[in-house]
Amino acid sequence: MATELGDANIRVNAIAPGITKTDMFDQMEEKARNKLIESSIFKRSAETAEIANVALFLASDLSSFMTGQILCVDGGITK
Image (cartoon, rainbow, N blue to C red):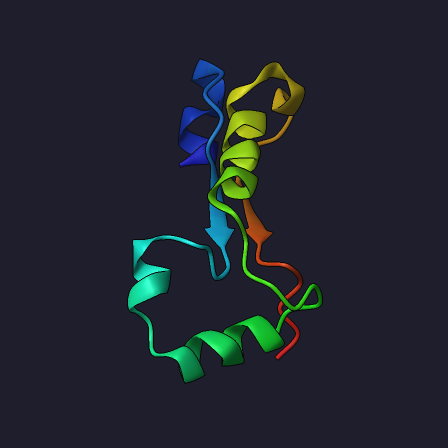
């Protein structure tokens, strides 16, 4: 999509979040949730604002020369 829309000056990027404190987080089995948290470098889940900040960056002119990217916002998943 980035290739097709670049001539129209449309940027196409995506966010790949890791485990984030949402309603779905609360519904997860504790063992599964802890396994995901332990697999990240920061050993914690993301706050929704941390993911939203990445979306704001992508929507702003600060990312004006960025397209065709997937940003992993997962606390550095290692496993």
